[in-house]
Image 1 (cartoon, rainbow, N blue to C red):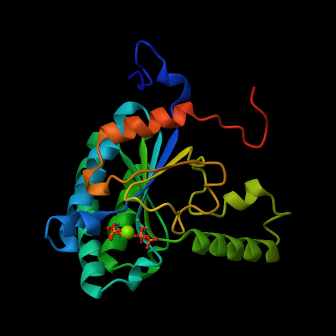
Image 2 (cartoon, rainbow, N blue to C red; image 1 turned 90 degrees about the vertical axis):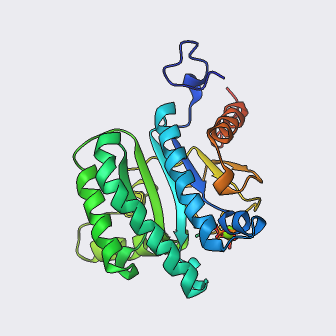
Length: 245
Ligand code: IPE
Ligand code: IPE
Ligand code: MG
């Protein structure tokens, strides 16, 4: 399959999504199928993220955004939330060591204020390291909610407006108040795990994203599933409200 940016045939290069977003779903069911605790599914899912991020980077994708923990996921049992926070901490600690070497910039989207102190420190460290180089960027949505993002942006805009720092509101200027400021909208959103909904993911940014749903559970997700999603994306006709050229 000619999906690579620098593939000699160059077929896929014409139409490679610049930004892929993934809703990491199905960890719990993956574990249940194996008679394991749900937390084992989250651990397997974290490994899958590592693999898929490297895969997307090597394909020549510029941005990969993953939905790792939503503003609604706090409703889960405390032990599960603690296990997820522990895994995120482990991942971020490892990322601090390896991201410079692997040239993976990491940005956390969401409200860090209620996250454990140690996680907040790691988030700040990854942001510092990422500021020093360019290239592939992975965005991890953590305590992220699409509606929460819009409400926060509206509040920040209102404050700037009151202080005379903002002029009339436009779609473009409003985008600059979002967690995703400066990041192009996702071209393609993939949801593994079989559910066909967005669950409060990128409500503003997904306006014209192509959506692909698959039954594969996230821990089982492979590079081939990325290839298949990109191939499907390349068959779609994106009109953005216009007509086919
Ligand atoms: C996704 O997997 C991870 C998070 C939402 C934190 P789930 O934990 O939602 O897995 P299922 O949907 O129960 O299988
Ligand atoms: C969406 O998955 C949130 C994340 C993957 C972080 P959920 O498992 O929380 O979504 P619902 O509850 O099935 O809509
Ligand atoms: Mg789920």
